[in-house]
Length: 343
Image (cartoon, rainbow, N blue to C red):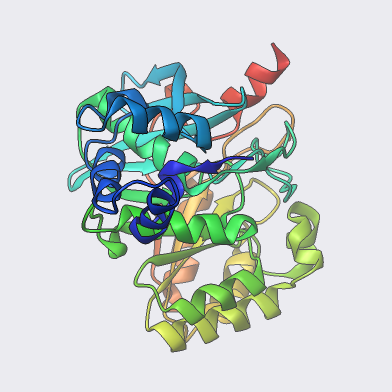
């Protein structure tokens, strides 16, 4: 496979340009086109000679994505994209508007192998990892389409970021580069379903991003039924890794908890969860589960959610309920790709 131009750091690009027999300064020009102008093809690099552009096209991949489908919520302007990649595979992204600006939820893989029972992303199967450039392309394409600047990124779309660790780290390095998008590291959230060795690898980097843990259950019995990853790393092992992470980074962890009616939403579940999180630098974000017909799961009703919050807060655990955005366009990831594959 050819190397992806958009996935390269400036220093890597400089080495490649020198290898093509071109002067080193050309790399800075190309890098600027890639990450400041955010072009969608080599041909748009107008101050680069035609000969060099042909060399780039002959020797490198230019990872981009085109808009296959776009849905816009009539309620809150949330935008959901189905993107087609160079190889004909499909991924999804969602752009959400908040008071502080625009956030994009990006995918890190084509499909997902984690097999969480309540998630649509895993239904259509896993195909491959995304390159750093393909993750970036989601941000750049959405910005260009909507004529906006995106200030926050959530790695919570299709795929498990820790299962594509190196490419995700390259993406974060590129999007925070002051010579490119120059996004603040504190405006990036990375979500994992509980890949413990990935948490320790991330801990060593001491990045000032927000780590989110898709916990969704207070014990092994419930979590193993709904999340196969728990068979490898149980709840106690996962929470130990989280405590180690907060001590090493001094960064608060956000625990995502999908509220599934009759499965994990009882007062006893709330008490058990609160006791296990007590004393940790943590925040719990309750999410009414997205109802996907293949799973059969139903979201908890408002009263049950309020009761769960009350129990958690009685133990001193900071708990919020995620505001539902894009409800009319099925803004949770996985569903558009699945429908496209069925077609």
